Image (cartoon, rainbow, N blue to C red; front, top):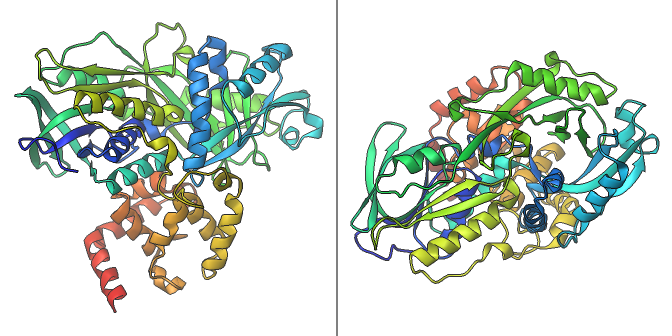
Amino acid sequence: MAAARRDVDCDVLVVGGGINGAGIARDVAGRGLCVALCERDDLAAHTSSASTKLIHGGLRYLEHYEFGLVRKALAEREVLLRAAPHVIRPMRFVMPHTGQRSAALIRAGLFLYDRLARRELLPGSASVQLADHPAGRALKPALGRAFVYSDGWVDDARLVVLNAVDAAQKGACILTRTACTEARRDNGAWRVTLRKADGTTKQIAVRAIVNAAGPWAAAFLDSAQGSVKQPTRLRLVKGSHIVVRRLFDHDDAYLFQHTDGRIVFAIPYERDFTLIGTTDVEYSGDPAAVAIAPEEIRYLCAVASHYFRTPVAPADVVWSFAGVRPLLDDASARASAVTRDYRLQLDGGAQPGDAPLLTVFGGKLTTYRKLAEEGADLLCKALDHRAGAWTAGACLPGGDLFGAVPQSRSVLEFDGWRSRLQVQYDWLDCPLIARYARAYGTRIHTLLQGRASMADMGEQVLPGLYEAELDYLRRHEWAVTAEDILWRRTKLGLHLPAGAAAQLDAWLTTHPAAALAKTQAKAQAE
């Protein structure tokens, strides 16, 4: 997969290691172009790991008549479930009827939601009496009726990493902790300066740039020398979430239509917890410095307390996070009403033969693959490269439970596949094999290659975190710090005591990844 011209280092440079950047890098690399991706921090370090963790059509978007977006997202929901059944799974949502909207209107909306796109994997919507439904036990008695429908849950940060892994397997160069500090058009190419975390820089020439910088997309576009300024504007909206101890003992999630018109989810999370969110707050600061505000914590606690029998107070919050969503500015009065659709803007330059610049505005997790496909189509046309779309029929790494082609049985029979793993690796305890199965899918065999006992797993650096997994994450998933590992590659940070991150960072410093790889290779050779 060499660049087509001798005076360039690669065909496409993707700037931004969130879901859209990783998705485009994967798609373009799979079409045979030479690709590099640079991300100044870690993969999914910002917006893409601060979502509500849903793969969904967006039921509430029907109220804003965004039927095209909902249809596209619903179709993608099924594609992604089959492609990555280990990190995406079906989930039922319980929506108590509070009188904010008429029952007839809700039924009509759910009828449309069930039928806007072809649905094979997920059951349709229904009306239930909460007194007779397991979800009713956790709610206040005054809530008598609810509507139930289906969507999907996703480990958002791992979804980003899997796209980057697949891109790398197809020849892409993934450069984390590497910032693009300068880009200028010169003689039909982009001359780009990349700066690593240690301050060293490198200049490369590329045929095209993809600006997938998320909240920083507009700033990057303004800084690119020779780019043609366009009228598209971003609206930065902060979404915040809190995590508390588990509030209910079943696996369904809740959608609350609150009295102020906002939608708040309460989702079972990491076995022992409940994730509550989100807020929609206009944001004008540095996206890298975003944080949940005390009033947002109080708001989410108040909403939860309004519906659940068990009240939720700020003191109950065990973790919180916030992210900035770079949304298309559609002049909506309320932040929660701003469209979640996307726009791809191709800047061909002011002069014939100028190198193209593709900028991504907006978007959401659920439609990232379609966005990437459309972006790759534009790039291939601009670079005169003939290659067709391919990702709709391909598994993400680890998702090939029953073969390379995505299958419904991978979703429907996941638990059976995991049970067979337990037999194959009977020396691993059940909770550990269950976590590995969900995090890594079939790549568990790569993690456990050459290991046949707990002694082969190496040191238990933290409870449930062994040297073998740390080695895998550093060598195959670009993990560098404790934060990368505990909060993005895994969610073990929720389950470990205070001080665990510092302990892990100290271990990582004294056990260089290169030395680990060398030691393992020697052990396997022997």
